[in-house]
Amino acid sequence: MTDPVNTQLRSALNNQGRPTRPVKNAASVAPVTASGSYALDQQAKLIFEIGDLETTGVDLPEPKGGKSRLGTHARKAPIGLPGLSEPETMRHYVRLSQKNYAIDLGVYPLGSCTMKHNPRLNEKVARMPGFADVHPLQPVSTVQGALELMSELSHWLMTLCNMPAVALTPKAGAHGELCGMMAIRARLLADGQTQRTRVLVPESAHGTNPATAVQCGFTVDQIPASGNGRVDLDALKARIDSNPDDVAGIMLTNPNTCGLFERDIIEIADAIHAAGGYFYCDGANFNALVGRVRPGDLGVDAMHINLHKTFSTPHGGGGPGSGPTVLSEALMDYAPLPYVVKDGESFTLVENADDKSFGRMCAFHGQMGMYTRALTYMMSHGADGLKQATEDAVLNANYVQASLSDVMTPAFGGVCMHEALFDDRFLKDTGVETIDFAKAMIDEGYHPMTMYFPLVVHGAMLIEPTESESKQELDRFIGSVRHLAERAQEARETGDTDMFKQAPVYAPMRRLDETQAARKPVLRWIKTNEDLKLISF
Image 1: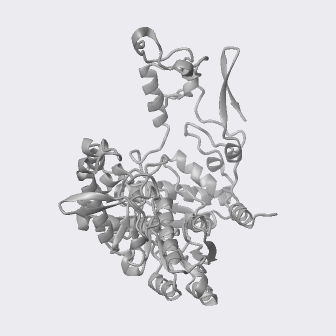
Image 2 (image 1 turned 180 degrees about the vertical axis):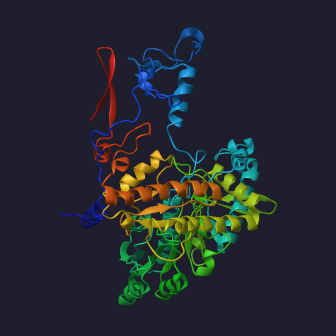
Image 3 (image 1 turned 120 degrees about the horizontal axis):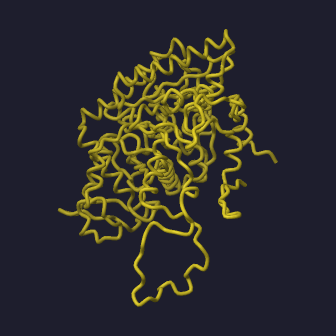
C-alpha cells in the first residue's frame, strides 16, 4: 500500500527540481601538490590514515602487583584504533576545524536556526565550578545556588511570556513541543474530553509540529496558507465549524516558517478556545518577539522556548539543547516533574507526582549549562537590551530583504520578521538551480542560507542574519549574494553557468553525489596486506 505521507513528501521534494549529483569533469583551479596541502589549507587525512594501530600515544602504569583487574574481560586481539602522539592528535583536529564554517568566522545565515554570536561571558559563567561541576544526584542542600539560578531563570521566562508556569526539563525544541502537547492531552483526559483527537497544524508551521502531535496520539489536520504566507483564517474557521467537538487544539509557529508574524493570532486563539481546544505556539522563533510581545497576551496555552537559539547558547553540532515550556493557567497544574519551589529561605525540588502532573519527561532536571548561559544573557542585557536584540534581529532581516529585492525575488510582499525568505523565480531560464546558487556561496566564503525550506515556497532561500551582525558585515554578505544573483541572471543571455555548476571550487571538498551520500553512509576500515582500505557498503 502506498504511504500517502511519504508520497506527499516525495512530491514536495521533487517539485523543487533539486539535482543531487555533481557536475562531471569539473576542473580544479589549483595545481595538484605532492603533499595534498595548499598553502595554509593543510591536508586533513582520516585519523586511521595517520595513526599506528599497534601503538598508543599514552603510557599507562602497570597494575599494582602486576595482575590485571580485567580478568576474563581482557581483550584477546588488537583493539583496531589508531594510536597518535599528542601533536598528531592536536593537528588532526585543528586541521578539521579549519575546514568547517563557524559563527566565529563570518555570517551564518541559516534561516530558522538562529546562529547568533554566543557572548564569551556566558561561557565563563557556565564554566564556574559551582555550576559546571554540579551533579544531579547531589543532596538538595548542596546545590542551593543551582536551584536558585533555575528559579530565577523560570521567573524571567514567565515574565517575558506573561505565563504563570514553566517546565525547565525539556532538552530541546521538539522535546518542549512534546511537553506542551502532553500537558494538553493530560488536561483533556482529566476533563473526560476523550473525543478531542484532532490537532490543527498550518502549512507554515515547523515540521516537528505534526510529528509531535502524532507522537501524543492525535490525528493531524493540515490548515492551508493564504497567499500572504500566513494561516488561512477562513479555512481554519471552516474546519473548526465542521466539527468543533473533536478539536484538541492547534500547533502554530509564530513568527512562522516563512519569517512572518501571524497577524490573526488572537482571532485564531479565540476560535480554538471557543471550540474547547488549546493553543500550542511553537516558540522556536521567540527571538523575534522577546521584549516586544508576550505570548500569554496572545491567548497561548503552551509554548516552548529554545534557550539555545533565543538566549545565545551555541546551536548546532547535535547539542546541547534546552527547550523550557511555558504553560497557561489552564495547563499549569499538568506540568511535568521535577520543578523548583522556594521553601522559606531555601529551594527544593518537587519530585513526586501529584494527581494532575503527567509525570517525568527525563531522569533529571535539565541542562545546567544551558540555564546558566541563558540567565547570564538575560541579566547582562537587561530588559532594554533584550528588546533591542529583538528589534535589531528584525531590522537586520528587513535590511537584507530590502537590499536584495531588486535582484532576487522575495517570496511574499511587505516586511518580514527575523528572517528574509526568497524564492527561485529570479533564476528562471538561467540554467542555474537553487542548489547551484548555494554551492557558489561556499566559494564566496559563506555558509549557504537555508535552501529548499520551507517547502511551501518553491526553491526557497531563507536568510536569518540575527542581531549579531553589524551593518558592515551585512553589507559584505549582501554584496556577495548580489554578485551571484547578477551573474546568474547574466547566464540567461550568455548560457555560461560554469561558475555555478562547478561550485564549490575553492572548498576542501568538491560537490558530492547527495543521493549516494544519503543512501550509503556506512564506512568501515579493514586491514588488507598491511594496507588500510576504506570500504563503503
